[in-house]
Image 1 (tube, rainbow, N blue to C red):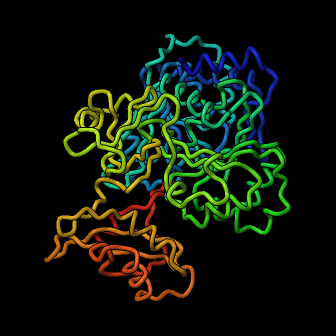
Image 2: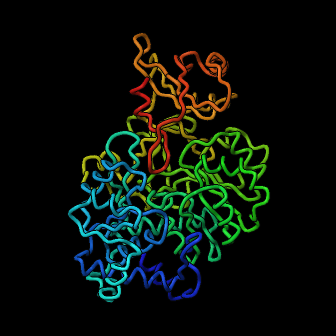
Length: 497
């Protein structure tokens, strides 16, 4: 499958149906969306962009992401979305690594991209200059037909440790992901999806393709706040959206939720980071829609498993809610030991994935690609276990594993206990060198009220083996997070421990 086939089909079958709406801003139909992509593709072709080239984009949530992604797909080129929250060094790294033929930015971010990308031509999305160029060059024919295997998107990993790498996702992988998500989340022609998170991140960026599958509508929130989110749901008749745990918590805590117009909303997808059981149970009780927890990785278009609405019911066990569900259609899961052999149900090992939605590799990193793509399987680096029914429960990252006295200690287990303690908003656990045990856990805790470290120690001692009880509890104002998706960065915490 190719992205351009979905784009052209939508323009042909549903020309006047709304394709994209920016909350409080522009709206374009499916015919207009295809026309915009075609004109930008023509202009880029005149600048020398062709099959296999890269186009960098630095822009907030808006039409720029749709125009650039789809124009690149028309050319067989790859869009390289850059994080608007990235530091100058991070931008410079991504640009230097991907070597774009052209750079595009919105008005707010043009200066930052020009500084990071001085050698490539810079276009300002939405400017009069670009409009004139499109009017002049927009009818140019693309130099070549794109192929399903052409890289359509290069997403730079969030870099929780080490240097971010460019994940190469093909047109076919993105289309296959669209079908897989549509089946799992029952996305149909009349659905209206709301993007609340940055489109430069894989979890949201891949939805650009998903909502082209059968002429759906994609609503984009330029910036998230609860009031704007609720207003957009009511105004546009939103049927589904994706939120991270922090956003879900803010929605539940908002006084505006009770009066919001949510009659059309049927599904909230949450994920990207661990969610407190208390928050999930509140959502089950208080939200008038189904819930879907997703687990994935950028290296596989973000969507791998789903905990379905039928799993989110009053009285469901903690064990079920702690899981991230079962494999989506078109995804095979295994849990493997250090020797690569598949483990039995209930045993903890590395989660491995086989699917047509996995990446073709890391951009210009053959050795690192070979480390994670083995015999057709993607080695995620996540630790987890599968039960007899195929439900996956994560135990953390392999690199976060603490080995204390020869025993594997999983930080996520300790973090779950701490997350249930009064006064704890969130917690992160890392290992620190210990003369006697080799490593010992240390907990960093963000307070949500009065906090007594000794009470935390007692709670852990009651529910955990002695070697799993953190040696030290450190109260911090906030946990360090990645700019892309808000995941906790444990590297700085290990240095501090």
